Image (cartoon, rainbow, N blue to C red; front, side, top):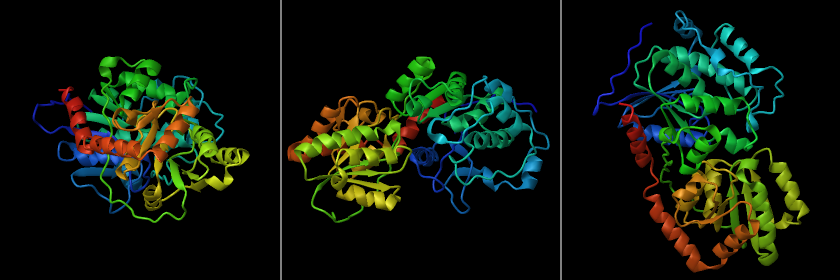
Length: 433
């Protein structure tokens, strides 16, 4: 095959080959919501072909070519691989031992090299994926990459754009094979998920990808600083672009109890700071016993948080909901008096913006990207639990403060749009001309 450098003419619509992992309606986590929001906003500005592991028949986005690899038949795959280009998997191994932070609990014993060899030399078969993060995540990532590369080689595109480490492999390989420019969108890093001591294969892949990219788009300046400090990415390649948010129809629900409600929702993992929330609740309830704390979500720290709240004697003032549907979550937001996001490391934090739409005062950690755009929110250091508790008490007790937070954040919402995000991404594309 012969590939030519794309001519990115000014004023001409760019052809973007985009790779994503989460994508509604299959999964609606923060990554999926952000990827969908950006795609919809980019549709009038560029030709976008979005390649994802799994798409649902009948679901489409106007002016976006949505390709779910799960829909390829055996015959289509046989045709696709009839003149397959050999995948240079060896350059992405690095000799690291497997490790995946919070993604899986499967006790892998093989080395990465064995996983790559098995996945890239076994007979091609239809891509089956029901759960994106269950079981052998690495195998799923590699199977996705194997098919995505061969598919991408047969498409016309100007720019490769990939979202988070799960899609970096095909993006990197296509850049190597075609010479086309590559943009990596960083919604979260292994540093965020597992801490500064983690140097596993996912971290190594993120680092290789960022250094190979023409530009890196972190979702905040906070995340950009992590890319620079902990991954060694040159500052000139880092182009932060904040996420947007779509306006929502507010749910209406009558509060089932008299207490004021302080809400935490999200994955209950070390990264999200659930222990900080429980510790602050203990302090608040010593001074304001008529408050109910609600922790909504699921995660590997859920049982530990239930045990911690019981040990502190908070059982009658602390509720754990488990996973909630979008509708149930909106109903919970409708009765909340304060929203808290005590994340240890939060690249952006779309949940805080959702809470703002319900006119709820928000309290967020300084180690979060959303603190850069929600100018009215109360901020605190995650190591200062006393300050966090004081912020909660103040937001519950002082009407003037509450109104000030809500008003200022309402102004901030005017600029937190996917349309603004898409325009900033287009500026990055323009720099590749």
